[in-house]
Image (cartoon, rainbow, N blue to C red):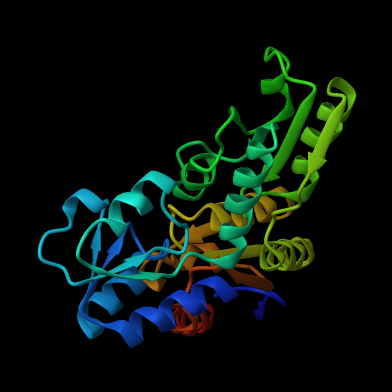
Length: 277
């Protein structure tokens, strides 16, 4: 059986930057999970004493706080700055960008449409920078019953599909007099999605490695599933099953932007062993 890695996969720039910061800082607490990968968070906790808090209210005797890659809300950041604690901001620059856009556009009188999952920490953070009105949606049909203003700005969660973002933009262009469009989808997301689209078309089994709470990993899985019915989303090599690879000739592998290489290598090694049996 051929085992092939996608041309682009795994750690993105923002995650690499956050992991490096956490390793250098040590003995700190992150506000929310630093990244969406439980295995890597456990490694940082054991090796660098970086513990995870769910929110700023859990801060007690910590001397150092790290803001996660997905960012936190404007209100939480203001509250954090009032405390006697050293702050290290590991928010991905690609996430900071829509925060800044939302703050600027709403200050200029624009209401804002955010294409994303309302419950995702990145979107919660971005939305908090809107001082007018924000509409968080997952598809253009959700806009049909909303009385939209004449001036609207639109941004996207960094891990969303560009084609779905364009559907929302096209709808807004037809119903609003002025639409300011900002492409805030991360370049690494584009590359990873294009790579898995290509690989899944020629594979008869696909393995996507990453956290089940990772939005970009779930997007990769959905793209793969559209082209390869036997697509599986796993967090570690322990979840692999021998029957997935029976009679298969080509196994494609991809990984989410928060998946470290050491996990991917363990997955490859186990697939190699399973395919020999």
